[in-house]
Length: 144
Image (cartoon, rainbow, N blue to C red):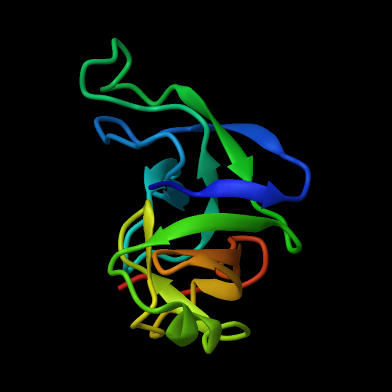
């Protein structure tokens, strides 16, 4: 699954991508060494959701060309899948709490060391609604 905007107005900005790094469409991104990269469980300073697939077969894969990113705002809500399915009751107990990323495309409802995402709702046993709280413009989450 990927991050999918469900609330708030899209805010597409074009940012230089990191050379020779694959990024899936719908992946949460962050800035590192001046380029957009796919987020992971340890990343911080998240920017937004990649709006274009970057693949190793692309002509500009090894270049730092600009790609569209839907920059996340304070009140924007995204739907995201979970790395491991849970029960709806367990997930409902997480509403109002912070969780981490598993990958650039999935959240980890069992971890809260980075507090990258605020759970604001539950769709089903494998999908939650979140706000991105570790955005580059508000919370400087240290990457490890």
